[in-house]
Length: 298
Image (tube, rainbow, N blue to C red):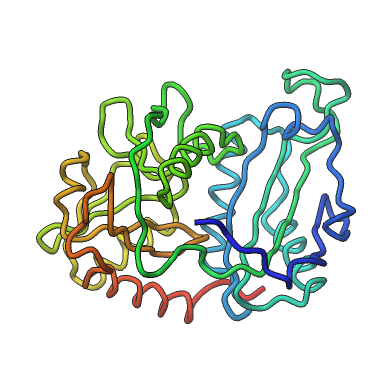
């Protein structure tokens, strides 16, 4: 699965610390913390008909991640929303847009990892692209990665940080295996998530997803669990083994960039009937109804 290039994105206007420039002219200092050490946090947002879905939750997670990394300066929500709005207006965007927010610790006065070298405040980057949900709606094929997700005592996944090498290495394995994405386990052998999304299975009508010990607190994940509660669909958060995934009736992934996407194969094993399952389809419809009727006007 390789995302295609959308011709509408050829002349994007991007926002780097409030400066709106053509994508080919944007610049980040070689002394910026993101360049020096991946020292940054990020969020992915989606724009639906002029509204950003779960904007408050995303900004709260961005702030929580920056606080966990001891950023001494964090823009206010109003400041960030203003820059998002300026970027969308500059690109005449209203629907079918994915927004990548990146907040770095900022520019250092000399190279080095010590945060005390940062004296100029954070760098905020707003990248908005025309981008529909990226996954094939007919279903994904996963393979299990050899890499294990970190536990909180190594690098807490609740920090939504920009150091994505672990995910990139897992994605390389999936590409080499001819799969769409990689399924990743924790250090105890339980499923954590994929290289890019939270993971669910459905067995006997019960929707199940792993604990957030070794995976991020996904906002789409939380929304799905809320929908289950509202609609009377049984759900559980529990440790999930590969065996439980192999024998599941259905499986799906969740994330802002791809919304809900069915999983039809894991490690060469067909999941359920090998197509989008009944509960997966129902939750996808409910999620679509929610994104079409709620969100923060921007």
